[in-house]
Length: 109
Length: 113
Image (cartoon, rainbow over all chains, first blue to last red; front, side):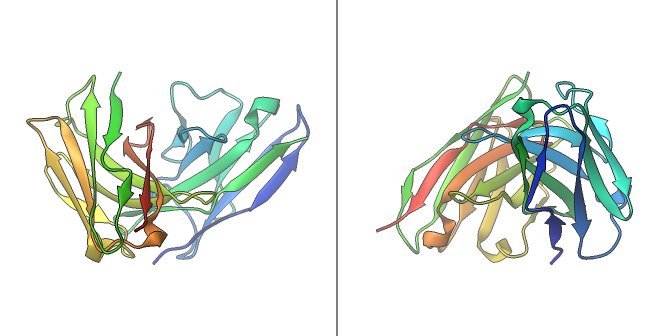
């Protein structure tokens, strides 16, 4: 079964830029893995940010962008705001099954 | 705008079956989408359980496949999850979702005697 790996935690200063990554145990992540990124704040329902590698949901601020970087899926947050502090989950489609990464806890400090 | 709402028992006995339903409003379940179940144990990350297409075809997490049944009821505009032979490890908040863009509020299911 595919394992999806994310950084457990990252810290960024307000106004800074941070990149979260998502690796697959099966090899390089490609657009055929349909990478999705979700944000979850404490006590809240997960909210989709990015689908199919780099497409923002209609409600996703432009400071969030998705890409493929060095064989991984990546989520870059520019001009980080305090409200961006949350858990971020990567989601990949592998062999017809979706697999979540373990999540990255982003701290804005 | 489509809205989803999970319903079902909040407490299930060990070795029993966890049964949840996701009611869909504001849209038809027969649209070209997939409908998923996801769970989150307390304090832990998200785990995909499985999904169903409008055609009725399903796929599920290999680690749960033998215990999971997902079905769709087009007449009631809802889809359901059955998870058999539950243990305490199945205690979690269970979410239903559509295409990842729309999620229910989640329902906590505790497995305990």
